[in-house]
Image (cartoon, rainbow, N blue to C red; front, side, top):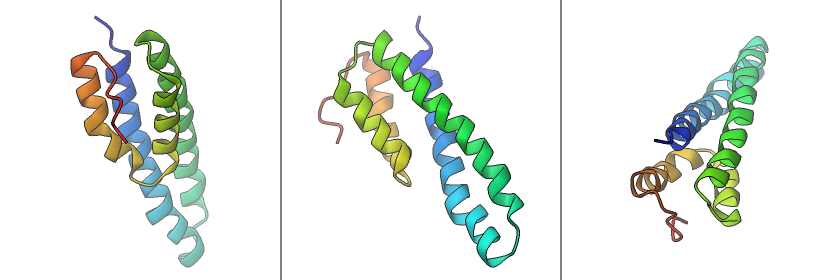
Length: 105
């Protein structure tokens, strides 16, 4: 039983949370609260999660024979605020069905 898709979804959620925290908590703290360390810490965590997301997306594409367009959608989801949360419902269906849902976006 392959667990790659499950790990991908978990990391996607964590990456999405870290992105939101970076944008709406850490950056305001840096610019309005004179606390630049917040961006250093949250930004580093987000960077690690972003790289893990990308690596797992490539692995899912390979293991589950996803189309290149699936990888492009995953990439866009990772750079748009709330993108990974939006895509989660589609990724969950894909994981459960074991097939690609072409009309996800």
